[in-house]
Amino acid sequence: MKRTRVILADDHKLLIDAVKNLLEPEYEVVGTFSDGGELIKSAADLSPDIVILDVNMPTMNGLTAGARLKKLIPKVKLIFLTMLLDMDTVSEAFKGGASGYVLKSSAASELVKAIREVLRGGNFVTPCLSEGMFGSFVQNFKRMSSAPNLTLRQKEVLNLLVEGRSMKEVATVLRITPRTVAFHKYTMMEHLNIRSSAELITYGMRHGAAAH
Image: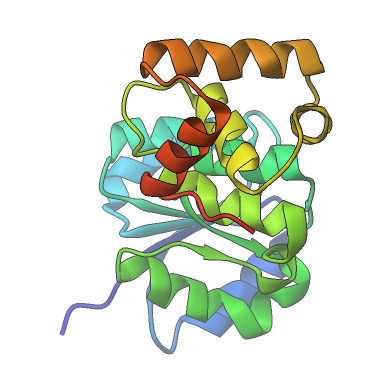
C-alpha cells in the first residue's frame, strides 16, 4: 500500500530530525526544508500529500508559503507545527488553507493524530487551543467559511456573534473597533435581507456556527 508522502519545513534541524523519526514508521518523508522560499520552489516536484510547516521561517514565513502551496498543489493538506498560540496566527493559518494546527510542545502526542484526521478530510487543532473563546473561534471558522456571499471578516464577526458575544467583545477579539463590528453586522443584515439581530444569529447557526 502506498504510504502518505510528507514534507517537513522548519529552520530548526534538530526538530526536523525528531519529527522525521516520529513519522517515518508510518509515513514517507520525501523532503525537508529550512525556509519557505525553498519549500515553494521544490514542493510540487515531490508530490506531497501533507506539508508540515512552521510559521516562523526565513526568506518566506509559513503562512505565506502555505497559502502559495495551496494554489500550487490544491489537494495538499497543510499542518502548522509551531510554538505560536495567538488567535490571529491560527486564524490566518486556516484562512490560508490549513487543515491542522499543532503546538510543538504537543507534537509527540498529537502530530500523528492530526495527520490521520486531516487525511480523513477533517481539521485538527491542538486541544489546549480548543477551549473557550480562542478554540471555539478556530473550530467554527472552517465551517463558517462555507456561508455564502459573505466576506471573510463578516464570517468572523458572525461566528463570534453566534457564540453570544457582544459587539464590544467581538471588537476586542478581532482587534477592530465596535463601530467596525456594527458596520459589518448591518452590512450582512442588508445583504442577506435579514431584519433583526436574532434572525442574523439564526442564519449563522444554520450555516455552521455553534452557539455557546
